[in-house]
Length: 134
Image (cartoon, rainbow, N blue to C red):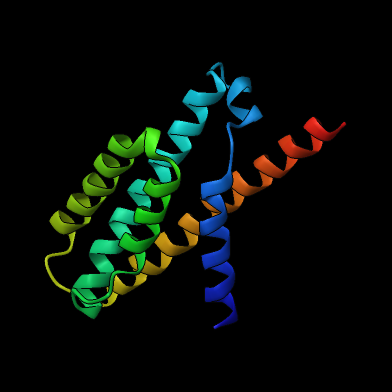
């Protein structure tokens, strides 16, 4: 339960993240890097959402709830987040027409990947805040 609460806190902290300095190192503007990270996370969450509702039923809206929160905090990226979430959903829908042990394992792996992405955004954001405070 503690891990779930921590994962939720980390994912929700994503909404407060600002553009990443790491994106500049990749030759992107901070906004492009930030958008790419949001898109990647939204895709992972869409994939996980499909698998979760396939195995747990449509009432399980855990990942959709996270994406709705992302959209409410990042309304400038609404269409990109929505499109990526839906693309991720369709990807797994094509791969896993029903719940089996592979689908359960994949959802677990996607959950871990989403957590890593959110943590990365949080760490980068914390680094930026520290630099701004100097």
